[in-house]
Structures are given as structure tokens and as C-alpha cells.
Amino acid sequence: MPLYPSLDDDLRLVKSSSRPLKQTMKMNITSTTPSTSTSSLPLSKLKSFHVHKIEGLGTHMLDEYLKHFTGLKKLTIGDCKEVDLEGMQWEALKNLSHLEIINIPQLVSLPLGLQHLVQLKRLEIWNCSGLRSLFPVFQHLTFLEVLVVTKCKELDLSAAGFQIFQDHTRLRSLSLENIPKCGHLPEWIQHLTNLQILSLVDWPNLTSLPDEMRCLTNLQQLNIHEVPQLEERCQKDIGADWYKIAHIPSVTHWSSAGYL
Image (cartoon, rainbow, N blue to C red; front, side, top):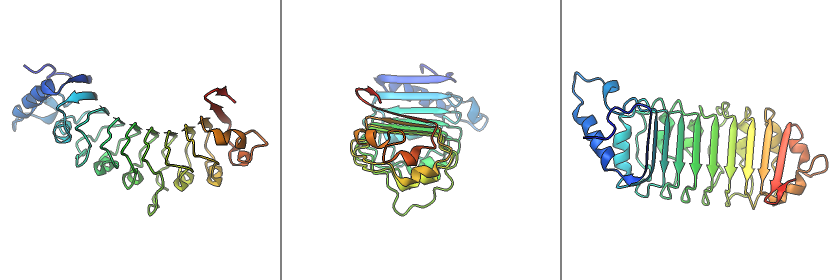
């Protein structure tokens, strides 16, 4: 008997086998008849799904299961070594608003299917060591309000050849942490005109802020943490980069030793 056929709130699978999920989904598929509506199927009303270190869970299997989770609002995929998200469809997740991708080293670029997530408001990408670019998918995620990218050592944030950023007016918060290949902020940041919070953490090669910072007229909070070359340049009134950020009400920068 499946372990959670009637669950409709939060399902978290951590360090376990994929077998119980397979059993539940077999029930889901076999109960699909012309007289059975999709909303009445097991797990179709699930709101939050978290998978972490699930043995035997591959990309194709995950894709097949997610097609039935039509009510899903939050999805976390973490540390699943057989998952690379390549070729997944995503269209069925029309209600998904929060997506977390954590420690998926096989991920090279954002899945093309993400552009179908028209309700996606928060995207978090953590420790994806193979991720090289956010494009071309990022330019289509125009409903995003929060973007967090952390510890992606191969990521290049440049967007050569992509110019469609004027539509990213909903993004309110951007956090970029430990992106070692980047020595400067991308030019497209100037188009995030409604950005309110910008956090830059652990950028050892970032030597200065771009003039485009002055375009971010709605920015209310700038957090700079462990970016040693900006400590002096962002000092109030006297720093070389201060004129670029003087319009921001709250500017906080600190090293590992503490606040400055």
C-alpha cells in the first residue's frame, strides 16, 4: 500500500529510497480513468515537494512524477546525483511559484522548460558546480521577484547576444554569492530597475562596481560581504565607488572579521 496517497500539503523525502514514491505514483497512474478528474488523483493537490539524496531517482522518473503534481507551489530538488533536469517538461507545474535547485553538479544550464513557469516568483540555485550560464532561459523568467545564486564556481553571468532584459521589472531581490569566475557585475543588471535588495557575497575577484549601479534608482539595500577590494572603494563620501551607490539608503559592507 502506498505510504502517502492522500497527502495534499507537504511531502519531504530525505536520504531514502524512491520506492515508496514509485508505489504511490503507480497508484496514481492506474487510477486514471475517463471518469477520474486530475484533481482527485493522489498527490495532484500537493503544495510542497522536497527531494534530497533520494536513491534511484533519475531525471526521467522525476519528470514523469511531476506531471501529476499540478497543484505544486514549491519544489526543492537537492543532492540527487542521477538528476540533471535536462529535457524535463515543466508545463504541468503551472502553479509553481518557488523553485530550489541544490547541489546538482550535472546541471550545465537552466532547463529550457522553466520558461513555461509563468507563476515562478522565487528561484534559488545553490552549489551547482557545473552550471555555466543562466541563459537563454533567464531572459524569459519575467515573473521572478527573487533570484538567489550561490556557490556556482563555473558560472559566467555575462549575457552576450541577449538583450531582452527590459521585461525584468518584477525582480525585487538579487543575491549572488561565491561566483569566482566573475570579476565584474554583468551589464544587464542596469535593466533591473525595480530591484530593491542586492547582496554580493564572497566575490574575491570583484574590484569595483559598475557605473550602471546608478540606474538602480529603486534600490533600498546593498549588502556587500567578503568582497575585500570593495571595502575601501565603497566607503561613504570618500570611496572611489561611493558616487555610484550614494543614492541607496542602506549600504552595508563587511569582511569576515565583522562589519565595516
